[in-house]
Length: 638
Image 1 (cartoon, rainbow, N blue to C red):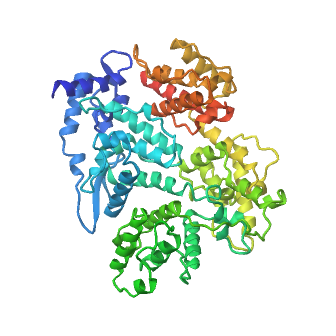
Image 2: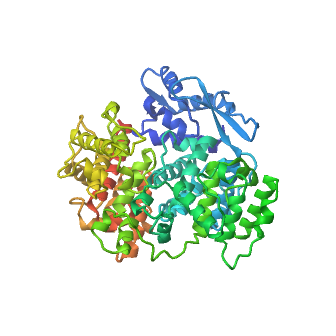
Image 3: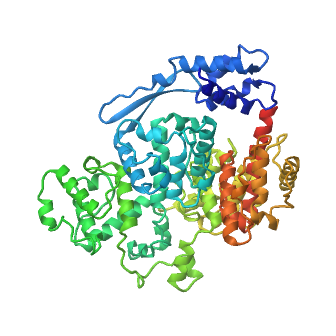
């Protein structure tokens, strides 16, 4: 073992040697091994620890364990590619048993994501300068590119701007090396940032990404990419979407549609413009012959890009070879700079995921929606009873508050099914809320009392209201303050719904701080934060979650430093902290503070503006999450 490798292992070991005694506890062994790049199933860790009756392990013993783990042909060596039907199968050990489970992934998805990442991030100075990009399509190059966490963080920023303050990333040194502990910090930041934008990362950890487990990497990449693609398919970003409604449909019905349904309507709208009689109901079997795509490209192609080579369409339709048709479609999409995600085989085979991505990207680039300023909504909606003008209705539907966005992302991160796209519309049947109650308080839901879809036209509305009433009762059982709200309020999409969801999010956040079986109170969080700041020699303090000083972000930054700094080595780079003398400087501080908090493990959904404007609800979640991280580190010391 080289001196350099030994030094790296020593640094990883020292992180868990919290008392400086040259020993770590058996409880820390799994994390310490992971810190050295060795992911060992929990059952194996328990077997190893049985040999250490005193419950502690010295550095020499740790090195022997690490050497045994790395040399045994048990873990990585069992990951073997099998090239069959463009599928790669991998084997991964279960942490709960010694059985092996088989996972597979589609090669075409890997190729599509490689193309997209190369296209979207090609101008990034670091990735291009360090030759990380372009990623080759061969082998496992994509998964290796994800190893240090830098690429994934930058992709998150591409999907949702300003999520990650890239100044907080750990970059390799001059010789191109980055310590494994620094890599883990990048991966922790990446995963918490993915969660913050609404990804579900259940059963995924940083070691999985460092090891490049294909099925987990591709699953997470798809979530991040999909969020970015679907973000602008809204009335706010494209008011012309209201033209997709039938004569007797309301805006509420448009909001209730999934992105796939909206995109199918958009395709049909464009087909109708060019006289095509085809009707698309899905983006799989209905697009396999490329005829729909040929007409769609003609319909949305701007004048400065056209005419494209698919006209006349009558000639194109006469081509019998479907692969040749698909190739022609993609050649013309390329001329429009819109050839992304799909290859001829993906069109002909009707790959649902990749065709959805292709159409979504085409919509984002060329929506080609006519001005629908005179479009009339026949059916009266809830908002029409309040507002007299359509523009006001659209403003009400299209605008999402920061609180609503944070709570929606929180719900989606917990795996709400289907995904919550619009807060009030997607909660109307009560099912998503009941699912979430089951996640934030295990076993609280009696599923026999839950009405499940499909809901019939006759009586279906009452079934949904019953679900909403049941959700209200679940909240009351958990001690929520629910006054003047019933199931019909939720079903009607009343803004009072937000009050219930906020209490759910609050309960979930504070449940991480249970002490002696009870949930901590706000004043106890404030007291703990101030004691932590004082013990670290920090001058900042908070009087509560409305404290005006929070707007500078200094209390948050100081608390992060108090939790994560090593003796004599600050964790926060205070050279990056501004004087917060104006709004721009306050924003920079807040974004840096949130990013650094996520980097040490805090799962924060608040946005920088929540701190700069001192939104007490979201500020509370920031300090509560940091307190949870602090508790975890204190328990490790014990």
